[in-house]
Amino acid sequence: MADQRTPTLTVVMPAFNEAGAIREVVSGWDRQLGTLGVPYEIRVYDDGSRDGTGDLVAAVARERPCVAAVRQTNRGHGPTILRGYHEARGEWVFQTDSDGEIAPEAFPLVWERRHEADLVLGYRDGRAAPAARRLVTAVARWTLRLGFGAQVRDANTPYRLYRRAALEPLLAAVQPDAFAPNVLLTGLACRAGLRVVEVPVPHRGRRTGASSIARLRLLRAAALSFVQTVRAALARRRR
Image 1 (spheres, one colour):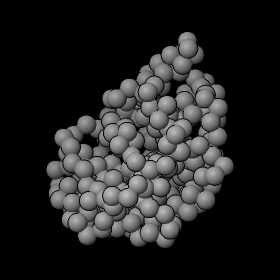
Image 2 (cartoon, rainbow, N blue to C red; image 1 turned 90 degrees about the vertical axis):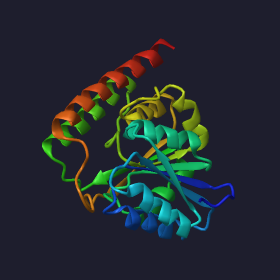
Image 3 (tube, rainbow, N blue to C red; image 1 turned 135 degrees about the vertical axis):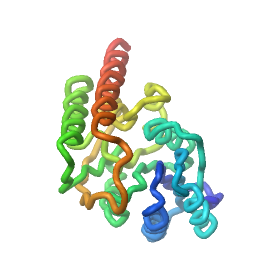
């Protein structure tokens, strides 16, 4: 169970079938955040895993008071992230994935820029992604550029720090079942004139296992994300 003090920082971490790495990843984040000198919570959301991920997260939470283990039936990555954003208690809200592709040691690069920003994006430096994922990234980038006027390197990066006071108004414009809410939130932040800072963070690749999204499903999901993002951009323009 997370420390009951009001945290300065909330980390939102969705997890699905990450039993091979989840203990190492969560423990590593807890050790890193312990060096900041501020109250924090790490909220790990087990999204209906079938490999024991939930039990491992619960065990870590019993050992580490700043970790909160949350279980739910499978909702999908996007809705799980949104739940975490809504339930975050910190003045600052950071989202990262549980696959260990970006190390917690890179977090100080993001954290130290918070005073000049409402949203700090850690764009993945040195990422060697397959062609399908590169296509998805390019589509997201150009969709935001055309729909919101947002010029960012990595629109959907799972390494991002929000000022909660800036995040909360944006969440109202994102549908609860959004496949890629971070893409939408990036566009909405830019359209609202919020201060967005980009910081390169080393990408080291998945620690164990493989992505749960197959290539065909990934492309279909990218199409869905494109439609949702365009709808949000048009709705914002009408306002």
